[in-house]
Length: 85
Image (cartoon, rainbow, N blue to C red; front, side):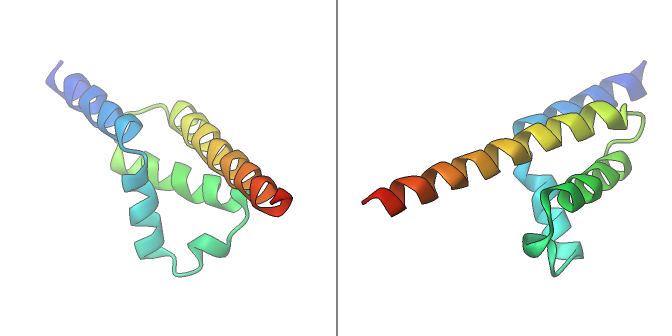
């Protein structure tokens, strides 16, 4: 029961602070910022499975992919706004 609580706590931490997994990825992969969204999602999913033992990686990966998609969407909106001025 205690390990399940620890896993749940760790998952909650990374959901609340997804930038921490990205920080780890950037430290491990010098070219992380230039990777495609798919490559980033694969790396972040792999890191999540190592950082969150016992977690369903597919759920964590889906959350990370959603988060990455939102970041890409936001950057495209900002680029469109900047270009229209």
